[in-house]
Amino acid sequence: MGKLLIVGSVAFDAIETPFGKTGKILGGAATFIGLAASQFKVKSAIVSVVGDDFPKSYLDLLEDRNIDISGIEIIKGGKTFYWKGKYHNDLNSRDTLVTELNTLANFNPIVPNGFMDADVVMLGNLHPNIQMSVINQMEKRPKLTILDTMNYWMDNTWDELMAVIQKIDVIAINDAEARQMTQEYSLVKAAAKIQEMGPKYVVIKKGEHGALLFHEEHIFFAPALPLEEVFDPTGAGDTFAGGFSGYLAEARNISFENMKNAIIQGSNLASFCVERFGTERMLELQRHEVENRLMQFKELTQFNIELN
Ligand code: AMP
Image: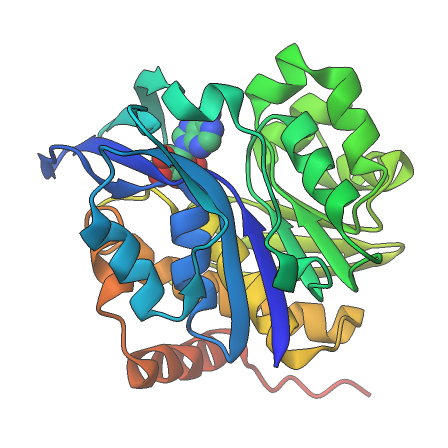
């Protein structure tokens, strides 16, 4: 079975959308990545940190899905990372109202013994030095290392980010981040520039407008499934990353052709994530629902124009 190592936040989130708001609920990038990846036949582990205010029942939810949580450090007397966000009416943009790093501020990731030889490493959005520390702990170069980041690290830790992206294979970021990283408006030009910075594969997520995959002169595009209802987009990007990395860890085939399938798997799972608050939908997601929606994806994108 393929091994997937995930590093990222495990958090309390509080979310406000035009449809309602939550108190502190289970969140964090690594949580969404792990839940999405658990849809595949992989051995996965999360490396993260929480305080002892983090309910055991939340950790049990992860463990119940066969996610190895021995790499989630619990700091005695510490407080768990807390993020609060409010979405605008169109749900495409949000304001971050609170970011309390708490235990994440001094996070020193320790990769569990059984995962230093992971096939796929998924580096969630964190300080690039933390991402680098995980890379440096690997016994051998993984088959595939994927990285997510955000504007905050570009603004504040550019040099560290540039150092880490030289060591990875795939970067998965959104369109605004790709533009900020390269100062190019054209995503084709931006992807070419990012490939010069290190990663040979560039995934650009465009929210409800789908995702693009770039590699050398090849481009692949997958739409997002047009949904009747989007309730809460929190974690959609991480869920996409979990589907992408989980699928590739299971398939053990990291060709460009198979990465196209990984993009579809990621998009498919993200379409469920947004249907309820936080992790709610991912926690009850059944295999047959995933497969039915994959069929819908196929129908959405298939056509039969004959070319001579
Ligand atoms: P997304 O909607 O894909 O951007 O991911 C949202 C998740 O990222 C939430 O569950 C947050 O807990 C987590 N998150 C937000 N800001 C940060 C940050 N600065 N560092 C790590 N995780 C974060």
